[in-house]
Length: 100
Image (cartoon, rainbow, N blue to C red):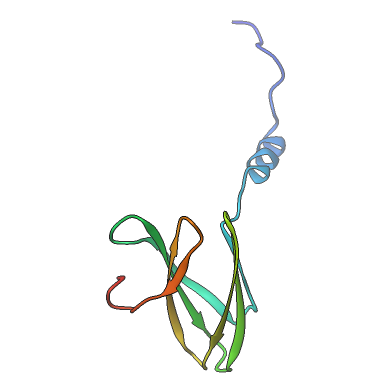
């Protein structure tokens, strides 16, 4: 069989894969960690679990990229928050137990 055209080298393939990465969200500052991300029990939303890890009261910013939405939160030291994020970008803080 003949050559069907140019082929990507291993390095080029890795570069193509990296270009296809997309981000769903960003979170700052670094002491606020995303510890879980899962589909809700009714399959209509994402459940995000966020945790303050440094022991400081901390304002945080969660940016959802699709649809664009900026959520400002305030964490107590070591606090865990559970958020329900709808496809529309609407969100609410929810009870840890009811969304597990």
